[in-house]
Length: 150
Image (cartoon, rainbow, N blue to C red; front, side, top):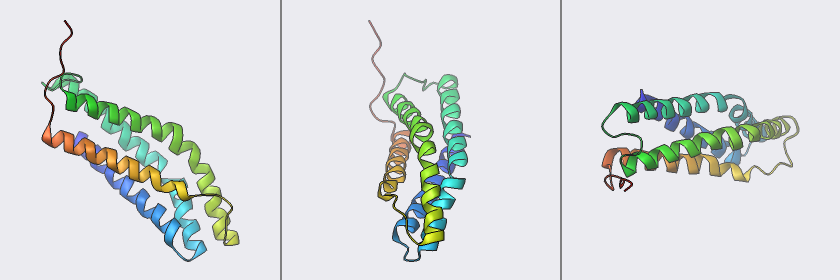
């Protein structure tokens, strides 16, 4: 379940990158607008579900296996990465999508928008980087055990 949820999350982030890239680089304003409207309409729910499924299954794995939640550095770092990304999805991504949808509608209807959408490159870049780091940590399992309190 954990691997499937994390893989889905990576796939959704790749889709976000494609939609953001299409919105930024396409020459046809209608195509750009449709990409932004699709991003605003369809991305939040699947990403939130994948993120919460990854977090939940990771916590359950941590509690049920020898790795624990905070026994090893790599698990603790993955947990922190996951929690930070879930918070970003709900606190930054979700509220910002309504403006992206409006800008997309303006592009479709009028051929231009006054909205600055240049910062949309950051969410998929940051998220894919963090998910790649979590994947590398899961495979390499670096750093050993956390020290126990005296």
